[in-house]
Length: 280
Length: 278
Image (spheres, rainbow over the protein chains, first blue to last red):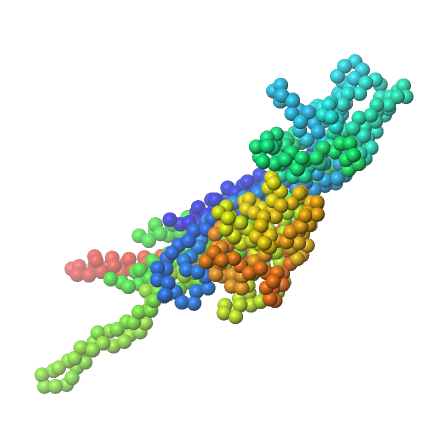
């Protein structure tokens, strides 16, 4: 049997997956705080053919006896790239952008009567009324943004002005002259490979750290108390996605050509089999 | 029986092996650190052909002696003898990821015996605890902070121990010294093979030595110059246009062999059905 077919089809399916990753990155080029994924390949197992039974007849060989043939390539990993995105100034008081890598907001998300804490880099925040004179700080999708103690942020009374300082301190100046302050909950992720993309611009961290055999503190740090000054935020701006469209486009062309090369291999293998059939 | 019948069949098999190898190269044109394979074809052992003849001696009754005359040598086929990985440096590609480290050859001595340059490799540990070698610098950190390959094999330091880091904010200098965020240090273990062609390709970017022995530490090897570069990857050294051309050449050679096989078949057809027809 011609092994070209299996080599090419193995690789074709994996190239398709890389194309999926690239198209997802390209689709999210305009998503605030989106972090791209980068797929890389690795070769598949090799098989040794011992087609030279008599080693003594094999003179002047460079390699050990036998011939080793591979069966294509597979996707090795699709790594999340946490690099900083460009900052776009919007001058909207409730837009905040992280200026430091690996920091995330805490967001409360309700799934089937269950409250989960998710994380996001998307700093386009909004206010949602909860009662007559109370508003809550939420994300664009309406999920409450949490403070450093994991409580939703509710502001009472008529507010004149909101300001968020570089360390994530939200100050609401009221019409009556009083002020109310909150510390936005921010975490610093030390091991970004634990982050799982949940859609809706949210990340999730596993909750079973003990089972996984890792310490929660090692994976992420809550930037509270004395660590507040490590938070890097900028008010009136948004962090754009870290997708470089021209780079993704180049990658896409590259993948597409590889795809074509692999299809050509299939065609060649098919023609070779046709030739064998046509011997008689 | 026609002798060439099986020669062309072996030719077809050899060319098929070649296209298989080339399509694997093509499949790995985007695999970091992949080393393209090259093939050598070799003729079957030479055979001496002799012609049976007779020598007429002019005597009264006519005497002849059977003799043999040498016609020449013949090879009755071809086979793919070797698949040799080509260890030349692949292109360097910037990725800006801290866990991508490219191994760059600067000056590696030429092996006197083979006339080819040696090569340097990262040492990694396979699941059985044995040391394997790779050029693929596409690393990542696992849950416990160990530096691993994309498939999760530990990258080893100079002493053969896994490298543990506190976060992905680490720095690798060109001499392989890793410094983590909390000041932990290690030196990436690099093996030097003066005759890398003797290494056995296992797949997953890995090579192993024939006898399981460990390679010499490249930092201490005489005259071996190389450097590590963080944020870069060594691309595959497959040349796609050359591979495509080779593939078409092999394909046409396969086709030519098939045509000759058909010609032999026609001769046999004549022998079987036409000789002796009235």
